[in-house]
Length: 272
Image (tube, rainbow, N blue to C red; front, side, top):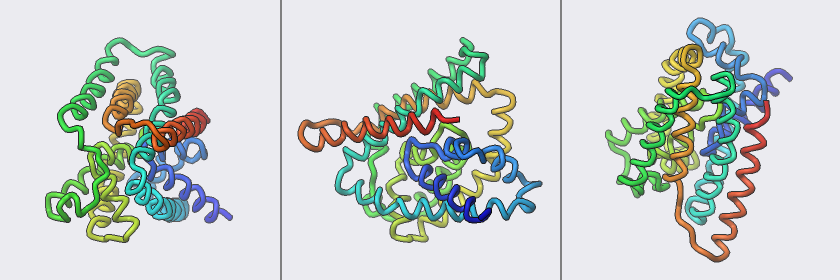
């Protein structure tokens, strides 16, 4: 039962990580295993906690692979509806993240920390203005195929996304979406394209090894600075994900998806 439970927990975390706007870290908090994960994946503890981590990781992989075909299909057939659902997930998770940010400063945000919020938001705004097509869900073929530059990009972006996954309230898949490689990765997962999956896996491993200590230090010494920056990135990301809007059945379904996924994200992220 212990292994089955951890596999199911990993499945839920994997599904959460596959959806931009839903935080795998938040799901771990909801399942009450976040502290256990953070403790287990340090260099000194990982070997003695493999019985906990292996089924968890296996479940996460299963969750990501299971959802990939659904997401890839939606990207191809209903991209506007899908992006509105993504926006709903981001918007729905914002209140809990804002509350978390305030709680790190005894119920209020220190004036100096607003600087980090503004800078993060302006970065997202600049991306939306300078490169509005950065987050289009392109296929591997549309990106010109796999070359060394794309391999390096997949590795670096996956490492950064892994750091984001560690944080409750921030979605690693959202980071991949903002970097413009989410579509490529989900397509690769759905089709078992190892040329893409291997550099992504190596990037995730590197991000996990290097990111845990970095995040632990930030959470210990500068938690509100970190969460202010995350909040700015989250709010600004809506400008990048925005797919446009057209009236009609597609528009109605997009609004319904936005409302429904906002509610789901709010309920999940608000749970302790």
